[in-house]
Image (cartoon, rainbow over the protein chains, first blue to last red):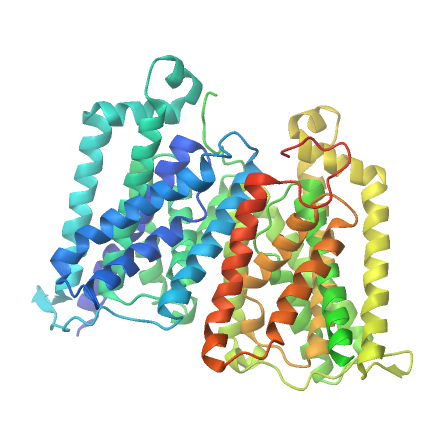
Length: 291
Length: 294
């Protein structure tokens, strides 16, 4: 491969990774916007989404990929709701440290529950590996094309939901000011539940795409949580389109960074970007809300 | 008997580790989720120096200095973040430090780890038996307790609490909240480094697998369960949880169970954190003057 197409291939790989990070970051930033806290267990929704698909594709279900996706997404949505119902709702008005430690505990619980059931080893869905197709000298595999198509689909759905529906409007009102939304007669309970489902489903979609392209392990949540967080920080916290952009930037930076640094440090790139942003913008105003 | 001595040593080391985190989480309200990084920095610094032939005293001092310096360097960008964001930044730092340990094979031997770390000798005494090591770590634990109690009771400690409870009010009273947080973070890092040094010379082998998020969670649970922002909380937590963890390790279970035991134990720890936060966020010992639910 000549050097120009090598660089283009790297950019393409960056965009593919960026799509997935964008899906993670949008879910994370959504919950932050509505509930004003960072869901440390978001990484576990990513991981469980991927494992739910693994569950339905394996024995005793043995469903094909396209059929197994639906129950996997539905279950991850339920997991998001269960998290809120059992942990976060009882301590909604508690102070931040309490919320944060509870989220951390939940994350530990869910990560190890996956390891308990499926073991710590790295797995794949066992699909046939197909040769990549060639476009203008660039290679792209079927799962990678799915990444681009599904991300576009998700972004379109999120746009329609948030800016064209009543439910989306109420969620935006909520993230602007909870109390004001409540006294304006907005059904805040319903909006919060919807936010959890959307956040969890976006996490599961991203997790499944990532696992299709690479593999799945119980540890996949934590590292992607950090990347999603870096992406939300780039785009401005609570800002959906910012998260999309931030995710893309992180994906590109990671893949282009490997041209200069050892691949062993690929996962560190997001963190370094985060530190640079913090140093350059000394006081990041977090979560501008009026309540 | 050896088992009891082993338990007591591990409890002493984790008490130091937990006391150091308590300065940050309990007294200053900093959500440090990468505390294990400073434990690792202390452990690796001292292990590398003593393996190269340096005396233990030098390794110890260098371990504390390295942990403190890294704490200072991290705190400058990270403390510009508030609350949960600081939490993720420190979580990221912990993961990156482990990446460095895994990748810089020339220095750390990577995943192979460092075997044969010498037992400490101080003032001509070699601490190579369990009772001797218990005496050493016990003395260090008491010194840590005394120093941190002194720090917390001093006007400096009251300023930390003021920053924790109401940053704006503390700033209005002329306290530079950012500087107080940095100092608190550095103090916490130095003592985490001390715990790491003691750990490295006790186990005589360290590798990247010893310094995972799991350790941070354990020490966080120790502080939170014992009672954050109290003197005795971290000690009580360390006794209870280390006793639980180490005794499970010595149960004679069939090998196919032990594979499940690790994750199961972590599930219990995670669940404990959640249950504590929902039903008793203040832990076993409640901070005096602390409001309920804080």
